[in-house]
Length: 219
Image 1: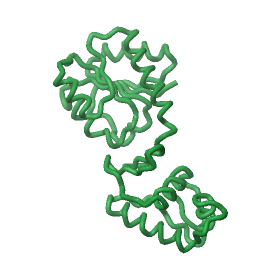
Image 2 (image 1 turned 180 degrees about the vertical axis):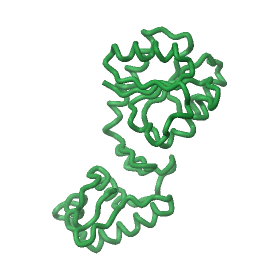
Image 3 (image 1 turned 90 degrees about the vertical axis):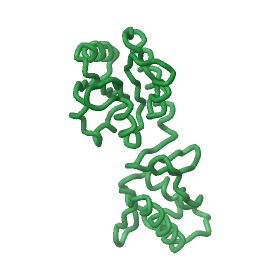
Image 4 (image 1 turned 30 degrees about the vertical axis):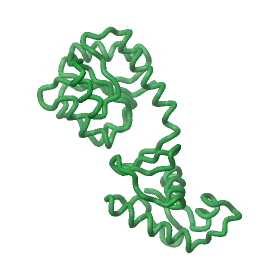
């Protein structure tokens, strides 16, 4: 079951989408007024269906505004399928489109395909606020731009974010990240964390919290 948000100013289209996808076992939230959406809460959804032609904000513009916050697939619902329109849609961060009028079969098939891909890719990435961890590429991104971390700095960040909220002593971080036989010591970890904080602070982020007398945690 997936949590899906459908945004369209046409209430009849929303009824069709809701009925079709709920029969597949999904939880579907419908919205006809894009201004009512709280952008910060969009991360709870597994997939977004987004109309392009809306009266207040068009779908392409809205997609660009939320793309750094929302990592789930976004499928445009549109009657605009000229090459230039499709190029604009994909450039704004969309993953696919449904051409109006669309069939129930196509709707279900496209949604299912993107949800399957999302499940396959989930293990290879972690999102934390505006930070994006590409686990396979061992790279940390901030607002789409790579953060220049050393290998050790990245490994520390990845370990902490994978155990978000848990507090680890310097000794535990040495053991978990570099191994029991590592020549690194607590002072090395302390210096790495100092450097990590300085680099992330430049990006406007400070996710590593000191728990005095114990160690560090990823907030």
